[in-house]
Length: 198
Image 1: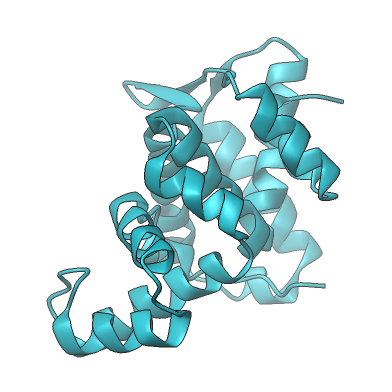
Image 2 (image 1 turned 180 degrees about the vertical axis):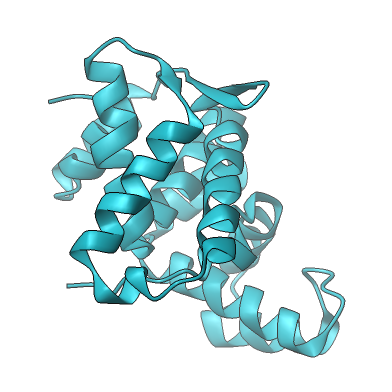
């Protein structure tokens, strides 16, 4: 089972970077060449060596779980589909974010209660702290930053809208071809999480 991680707090959504990297893959670059290009040529326009390495490492991690069909859709698909696949890549590579989508986002859709409040976020992390010594060891600052990033990812992926402090769930419309493709490759749980299906 994947370990919990708080790295999402410093890497976030990375949509433009994922799109650029996907185009490079389709242009014939392998992942190691993309890593080298990112560090040497700063193609993701980061302001420090450590940031270049951190961002590139996470982009590669996400690309590794995608096949050519999905990479093609990120690079050249319509905007919603492209963003949804980047969101899916985060679900597949970040256990805690996946659990949040399963336990809070999906639940809100099913209960037809479309508001995710700060109280919902805090309750989720409170429960996770009780379940995991690792999460319990994180600082309040780390938790606050993760909450900010979770909100940002939901809004940027068009799975929610920000209204003042709260997040309003907007159930996504997914291309039926993409839904079928992901389900056929055994990723039904991720599709159901995004669509709020039981």
